[in-house]
Amino acid sequence: SYVIAQPCVDVKDKACINECPVDCIYEGARSLYIHPSECVDCGACDPVCPVEAIYFSEDVPDEWADYVRANAEFFEDGPGVSRPDQDHPVIQAEPDRLP
Ligand code: F3S
Ligand code: F3S
Image (cartoon, rainbow, N blue to C red; front, side, top):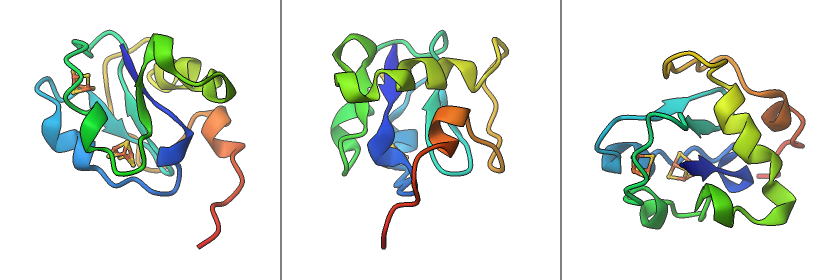
């Protein structure tokens, strides 16, 4: 599946949401998350992200490898749901982005 990585944190541009044909991109507090089993690997979201946060899982840069797990675990093995007041611990641990 595709994965949203560190550049989304505290940016949340949301251009990706409009491109996804299966609506598998969900909102957390500081980042958005892709549900790994709902994603159909179409790639439509990847080029529209202005900060290049979106990668195919096998192409996620090593420094952001934890984000593959973070996108999956945000959903706790359940169906996709937005939780705008919550984040995965990997995202929580990111320092605040300077303005
Ligand atoms: Fe984030 Fe980029 Fe989407 S910043 S919300 S992954 S368009
Ligand atoms: Fe959705 Fe396709 Fe991206 S299914 S999450 S737009 S790869």
